[in-house]
Image (cartoon, rainbow, N blue to C red; front, side):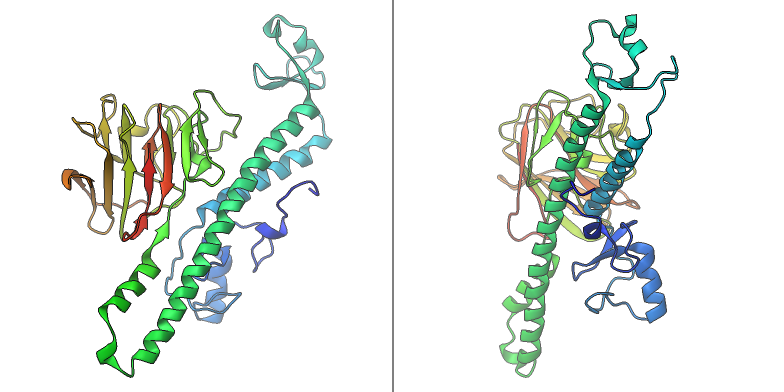
Length: 364
């Protein structure tokens, strides 16, 4: 594993020193295996970070999805590297699988190569194909880790600003008359705001997510990406990297240059393989695409605003340019929700507009 740019130590839980299993993220930006953290809290009888000893206000910290995906990719590649030492045997001809057929995307033996099934096909040595696959997977792994590190850095900045605000409040507490509403508002915004990035591990193989995970485009061709369980395989969809299971969240979607679009939210458990994704657990609006459920928008818009109130069970869509309400879905949410966009012939990019709890601006 010396050739990897990500070490096992970087992906290890500080408590058990093993690769993270179901990692959760504390407000202090430290991550731990969910079971390790719960066991630590039971022994200590206090909800504090095992590393920095900062107290946590949440009994059930959120799952660190980005880190979870990075660890899964790391373990998958490590297992593939370990398996190289033993050559597999062709089930048809009992010969060693020494070649790889790019057309059929499968290893073959010398007899398979000369068979009618693989006529006019090209072949590569199996070791060369494995090396190419490793490079592609490591590129995805490194990109995800970079995004995670940047996100942790932003969270550290937010936490530092919050601590400074708390200290300022304690000082001003001696003089309540001068404690302004502006200070309270700034403190709330500091704690609640959180940038949203795309999760490349959910993107349909025909979609290309940028290195900084803030934009996506449809390439028209399938990319050589792992067929992991969370990835879409039928619809041109991609999800946000973080899910919501409480609170109020808002994001804008730029649609002025798109001829057709679908956007909204979906549940974490919704099936992403095959053509059943839009059958249930999707709350969305669509323009010029009537083959899926959702509220149809009749006129072309420049921008669509999505307002999610998880606790009240509402998802509202509006035109922020004209301040016009489009549609509101009302239900009772029990599953984690993710922002979702459908990108057929468009390009999406993310920014962070001010004054919203959860910020996601997508330009098509």
